[in-house]
Image 1 (cartoon, rainbow, N blue to C red):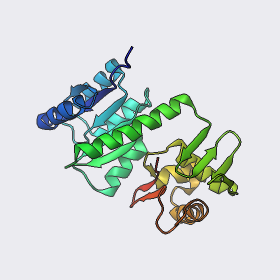
Image 2 (cartoon, helix red, strand yellow):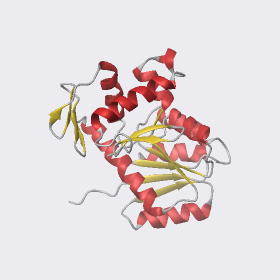
Image 3 (spheres, helix red, strand yellow):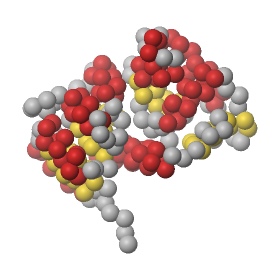
Image 4 (cartoon, helix red, strand yellow):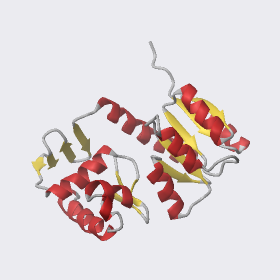
Length: 229
């Protein structure tokens, strides 16, 4: 028996964009449900139990960030923001609220599909609670707290390991500076972004073949970091 098509709820008040997404995603094997307001979108998400939500921030009845917060009260399904707002602070607010990714309009269907695939893989990995994570030549054994590159064990300090393990648990997702600082160093250190730059540089020195041009520990300028999968 074939697996059911992944379900996507699109919360977007612009009918042409909804139509474009319905057609584009539909031809790639997704079942799409639509909502034109934030409140309707929250209801659709509750009814449909989607595999993924695509959300505009500029909705007529409420801000999209409030929709993210409302959905996060009961669901951990991936949320991809699709918005004309390109300011870094707006992206940070949406990601801090619990969104998984942020794509600025105008956008290409190919890039959106790639972001969707990453978000769904991340969601599946979380549900399976995998104890070993691998990307490229990097392998992290979360159960035994061991890290390898090219099958050679790499020694990390406790803070370096906490930083890496947080990125692993959010692999493929943009994690903001504030989120990382809060989890790795604690709530009192959310403004100490220089800590993060120093330790990220140290991690790249130990894990990347060319730390100056990292392939896996990627910077999202002005927002945070992403571990590429």
